[in-house]
Image 1 (cartoon, rainbow, N blue to C red):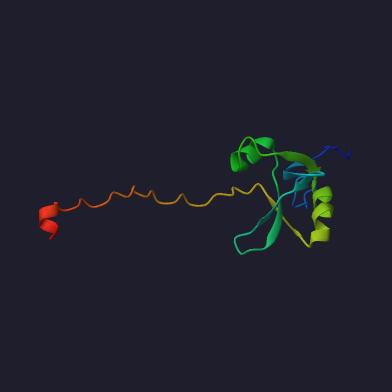
Image 2 (cartoon, rainbow, N blue to C red; image 1 turned 90 degrees about the vertical axis):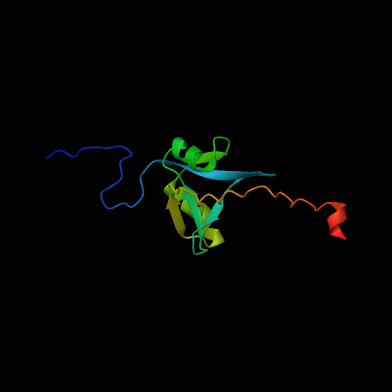
Amino acid sequence: MADTVYGDDPEPGERIPAGWLCVPVRPGVHGCAARLFRTPVGERTAVAFTGPARLRAALGAAHPWIPLSEPALRALVAPLGVTRLTLDPQLTAPAPAPVAPFVPAPRPPAALAR
């Protein structure tokens, strides 16, 4: 049986897609740095997206990012003690309830105030 080559397709046992990931960054004085986020329970995590459209949907069209492979991202954040990698998070929270504008109560006429 001939072996089929799939290029960047992951092996069946791999948890993370092979190939490039879109990694959100923050600009700095010496270039850029990968942004770290926190899980709902407070653990630090590196975040990556499987495509630019997913990154834009979660963080906005103007958010800067760089392409990195999964091993490169893990190697980048390992010295910081970060071992968790979160793929394609939605990064959304429930919208706050609308707040009605403050309207002061009407003042009684000066004759009734005495």
